[in-house]
Length: 298
Image (cartoon, rainbow, N blue to C red; front, side, top):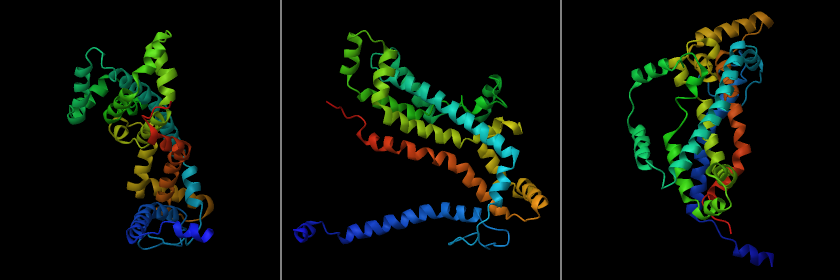
């Protein structure tokens, strides 16, 4: 019986095998840079690769991580990034969901004109100088809100949300309105619960954007105490003769041990990436459910 069942199993064709090999190689190519960064972050000063390319771990030294964790500027930047990420996601999701839900209603007055103006911003903008002047007049220079308010809505995300809300059956809202529910009640009690996978996905997209925010900080923030983690990371990677040399010298003065400067750079990348990477496992189930977005359960 087992032999018969085994015979019925689908045999892999040459195309299937080739596809698996190709996808496996692409996965390795994608994963290797992250692996290489992790390996270098644990490198000792005595173990220096000429090309900074490790295939196998040659050393294990936590000194680069200790140096980064002992830097007060790192913790200040990390705190700023966490605040921008949490507040920014709440702000962006609130106005994006509210705007998309309103624009999904065909009977909304001025709907077509608003959609035209929104789409216009995807192709044209006023330029950097007028944008800077507007931000300055709003008093957002050297303010953490400059990384939250101007980037509050991603137009592309807004359009996708609008299209999704437009696919929901009108009978859901009609039955709720018959029972006396208003639009806000329908949005929070009916629409959002059945759209949880969809909302969680875009919440993650906004979280990644806010976590990686550096452009607005580079232009509008000159106060070192208000810079985000990505600016700190930029300084460690570009100004290696400045910040990293200072940190390495401090470590050497404390315990008479040398620090491999590239290891400090890679350790900073690892520490900066881990928090946002930890979010993915918690939202993975929502990505799986997102495949069924738009389906109607009876």
